[in-house]
Length: 164
Image (tube, rainbow, N blue to C red; front, top):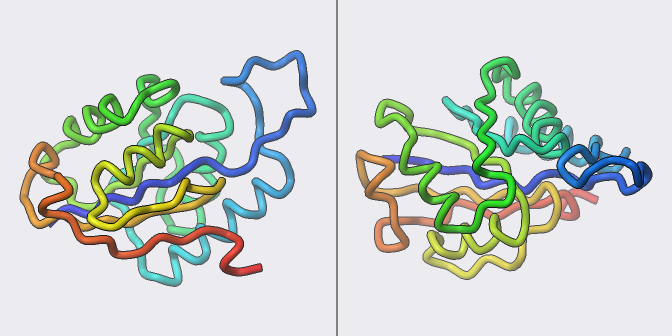
């Protein structure tokens, strides 16, 4: 069995016009929502063996804040440049390249691709992921290369507004 947690980065700030899109930080709400979702995932007993994040500042910061709540070493977050600007097929390629010995992984990325990716794999329709929204899917297979909608189960779909 393989379990994939698909997480959209938290709310970013538009206060720094001089920064590129890639370098935009989280705003205060984004920081608190990332911590909140990390706490909620921890309450569910979520323990990813691998967290893979886009190289964008807002994604890495989201991954770091969530990882702290999951007792996952933030230094172990794998930053993958391919996730930033990726489409759903490129995200699938990133997941396909996950080592077989990893059974539970979290992928941190961006909309629209991250929502399209979740829907490509989920047997149930997922609305567009809001910031810091997470989809958990379990796959009845032994290799990341074999994950598909046909062998998937939706475990949950959650987001910060469920707790406010």
